[in-house]
Each structure stands twice: as structure tokens, then as C-alpha cells.
Amino acid sequence: MAAGRGSRMMTETDSSPKQYRDLVGKSVLQRTCEQFIANPRIDRVLCVIHADDGDLFQTATARLDSTKLLPPVTGGAERQESVRLGLEALADMNPDYVLIHDGVRPFVSQEVILRVLDHLDSDHPAILPAVKVSDTLKTRGATGHIEGTVDRSKIWAAQTPQGFAFETILNAHRTALATDQHHFTDDTALMEHNDVPVLIVEGDGANIKLTTPQDMELGRKQLRMEATHMLSDIRTGTGYDVHAFEEGDAVILGGVEIPHSRKLKGHSDADVVLHAITDALFGALADGDIGSHFPPSDPKWKGAASDQFLVYAVDRLKARGGKLAHVDVTVVCERPKIGPHRDSMRERISQICSLPVDRVAVKATTSERLGFTGREEGIAALSTVTIRLPLPEDYWDAHD
Ligand code: MG
Image (cartoon, rainbow, N blue to C red):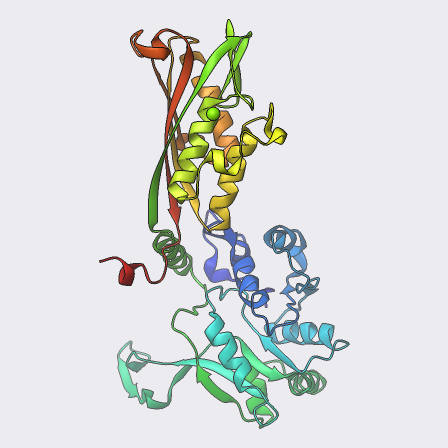
């Protein structure tokens, strides 16, 4: 359900509907949909949206690459009507069960979804996830004073997804429409009205409904904390590479062609900078080196542009769920001068690695005319790369 307007979320600076707001790089609605799409027991996901939100919906869900996601349905003036329109849109499909969920509860866990699904059967056509209220509840009188204390032992706060036998909930909505009853604030209330027993199962305190700007801020903090914790296996790798000069008119360093009186000799394009970074990345991953992944004996790498080696290493990192944090490189040569090309090298490396340019450092030094670099026989490059990987669950058990 994503048809609401959420007036409590509106601020002077942001009047956009809350389900489309950014929640750490993804819209609220995308995060919510992802949870249901990810569940193997859920076949289809249908969003009911506001008539004005077609474009917002397309943008918010563009990255949801799933055949499970159905085209959205336009809702009505009230939540009850919106739910009914959503159910009617599924009538032809006639599923066994349907879960009805608030689009602004993106923190719903697989455990809660499964708990609702697990309890749905012919004897239990309606399931409500809920949490026991732990605060002491008071009623307040007209003068602003306490009127009384509520016995909270039987009080549960309702959450979603609420689960139903499809026919039962669809028929209840159709009957409510036919009898002109529009006051039901949630779908289990409609069941209660029809004397259908609703089983309460344990919800989850984290499954909050994002209602106020404060809720959004809390949600963002929570997600960032989880991400930081998840990617807390921080590793560093170093790389070193050398290529000799030969006859030519330009060198390629960091993916940038720099005019020079010589060129670098190598099987590929001899980009020492990208080779050093690639090796540093393999080092951080403890995953071999550039020679083992791209053997110089293999003719297919002859004259190859070295950005593909680095892209490959970055892909190996991504495949392990990791993130590149920082790339540092030092070029050692007397000539050509690196300074004038430093920023274009940083820019190019940042593109190749899909890393913000302020996380890419390129430095240069001479070797004071000493050694092979000093004699201008070749160029050396050193690199340090920092990555973040998901921390294995047994990390603290295995490392004391
Ligand atoms: Mg090399």
C-alpha cells in the first residue's frame, strides 16, 4: 500500500510523499518491495499507488529487476478503497493467500513475513503480526491530567504484513463496499467486523512505520550502522610494477596517454600505474596476482588496454560483496612530469573503479637520478588499496 499522502512527513523543505523518499541510496518503497520480492514463497508483488505518483513510482522501482513486480494499480481516496482496488486487480490471478503491507514499513524482516505465511491455512484465514506494548499506557482527560491507567496485559500494537485467505479478504471488501461501510482503518478490523477470527503472531519492534521526519532519520541511522557493521572486514593490499622504456612517443599511465620521447615496453599497454593498482586489489582480496589472472603467455592480452584488468579485479571485489574504500598510487620516474596529468589520472582511475575521485590519490616522485628509474631506463609504480568486505559471521570465533 503506497497510495497515501503522509501529511505528518511533510516539512517546509520536502513535501514529497514519504514512500518515495531516499533511505540511504534507495527509495523507501524500493526497500519495502525488495523484502517481499526476495522471499521465495511470494509469487507476485503489487503496489497500489496515488494517481499523481506514476512517475515517482517508475523512478523509485526502476532498479527492481524482477518479474515478480506487477504494474502498479491506482488507489482510491481512503486506504480501505485502495486495498480493495489492489485486491480486485489480483482477482483474475486468484491467489490462495495475500499479504497486505504498508509501503512505508521497509524494515520488515523475512522472519516476520515467514511467520505470517507459516500460520496461514484453512483454519486460520487471517493473521496479524503485532508487538506487545511495553510502555505503561495512560488515558488523558480534558484538563490534561491522567484519567486512568490502561491494563496493558492484553494490548498489542498492530503491524503489517497482515495475511489473509484471498477470497475471504476480497469478499469482505466487496461486502463493505456494497453496504457502504468505509471506516475500517486496517484489514483485520474488516475481519473482526465479519466475525472471522484473526490470529496474532509475533511482529518485530524494528518493523516500524515511517511516519514522521524523525522516523526517517532513525531509519537512516539504523541502515548506515548495519552497513558499516556488515562491511567491517577492512583490508589493505599493496602492488608494485615496473616497465622498461623503448622507442616511442607516449606512455600510458593511469589510463591516460602522456606524450613523451619514449614509450613503455610490455605485453599489454604497459600501464604500470593500473597494473600496480590491480595487484594491490588482488592483494587486499588475497586472490592471486595480475600474472595469475592474466598470464603474459596468453596472446589475448597482447596490446590490451589495462583498464580491463582493473575492472576485472573490482568485479572480483563486488562478487564478494565488498566495497573499494581508497586507492593510493605513487609513480617513480624522472620524466615525464606527472604533476600536469595528476588530476586526469585520478579522474580516469575513479571512472574505472566506480569510486569517487576524492578517494583516489596519485603522487609522483623522482629517485634522485639513482637506480634504473634515475637512469631513465623505466618507470616504477607502487599502490596501496583499501577495501571493505563483509565480516564473516564466525570472524570473532576464529580470531582471538
Ligand atoms: Mg605490468
